[in-house]
Image (cartoon, rainbow, N blue to C red; front, side, top):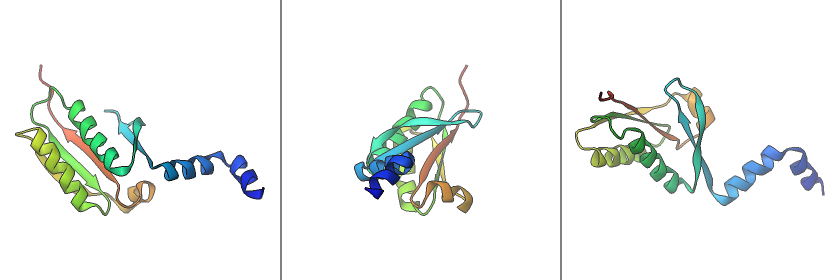
Length: 123
């Protein structure tokens, strides 16, 4: 019973354990002003990466050839694969890879990836 009581008292710990057991991966998005908000969830890391690519492509629809920035922490091969997919699906675009600082990595953890973009809006 002590374990049930601890889980009851600390719901966040229980939610985190349940999400890990089910393979739920949260996605975060940033607004143009830098405000973070929930961007959805995916079941498993491979699906989360695919959803990340789809969200990036959707956000740049209507922009001419964006420059993609793919950030990672200890996941250079995964970041390169994501950049290749973005470049393949948006001909004429460009991409660069960057490893995030340890301060940010402390929150995201090893293997974390993120996609940003630069592009000009058409009038």
